[in-house]
Length: 129
Image (cartoon, rainbow, N blue to C red; front, side, top):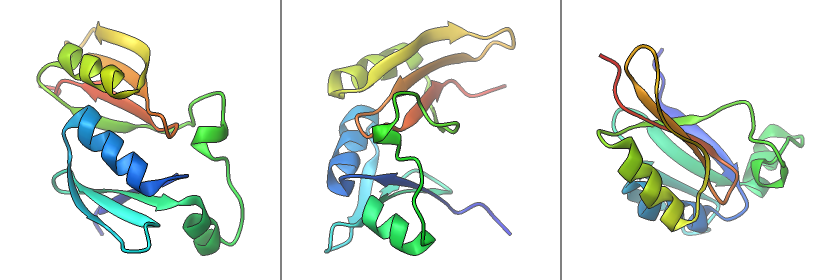
């Protein structure tokens, strides 16, 4: 088995794709013609977005929608960058909310957290080692 996808459930798939393109420089792989599913190029795994309607239909039940929660959900998307400060600035200028500014951890990694307009929590960090 191998890790292949992270699928984030959002209100507006096209808007989330466009935000991630602007904020993090990720390239769009595709947006399904119906607009309910899309993917970004991220390397070995795929970062995908699906509409709440599609997700609820697949799950057969409801869930906590990140954009409707005052608090970030208990998961994050981690993006590695050489310049966490500049990446944070770019994300905030694109519409993200800065939750934790760049901080150097005891093990030497620089880490920051932003929350996207769709509610997704993103860690921006330098590589470990």
